[in-house]
Image (cartoon, rainbow, N blue to C red):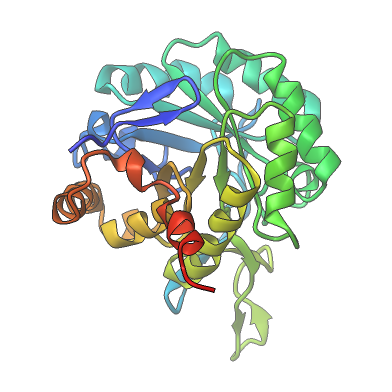
Length: 309
């Protein structure tokens, strides 16, 4: 079975990528996961400088999912390049780096640093984090802002540029088109949905930030719909995510139009989920006599076109 996947100029071993924010910097899992066996490892978001993030409580379990308001805690791009990137290179990981900024100039500067670093395969632009009050989301919720930040980063890097889109807008497909027009090599979606939980005893929000991002199986049907709509709007590759727990979920995204998928929350429940998903993909392909995973991308669209009126 041919699981190889093309994202811009990249050829990935398979379409399964560890999602940013749910896999640390990748090295935390190298003793339980062969990082080279994954299609990619997308490390947690990086600003220019170190960032503490929000104080506890930062995570809340919800029915069929979880809420987080970490606040993009991170080591900063220079420490990442010095302390984490060498280990990822040694482990043979295909490294996607999620980058953040409070200004357009910061996105550009972080991208420049990573473009000069050995071992970075692609840049994922975080313009959609719902639980910080400055930067990021201000670009991701504006069509002009999305176009502007993607275009600015595109001008300063040779690496594939992959903006991560927010679901917290009326028409994600419009933002997908803006990103494509600005020169994005691919898009990834969806980021988490803005949500909250309240302690009924204290009558106060549980998260210190008040609101956070909802992930997990609860959001999957909405995320699949958004990937489907964006596939109709753009021709560049889509990396789909949102509540993928097993191979069946991953295939659903691929049929909706995702070229690759990212898996996040599932990793917290089962750090050995990666091999199960990859084995499940090959089992599905064998059962359906599909030789190339690429042949399944967007197949639900073709099926819909042939349905009787």
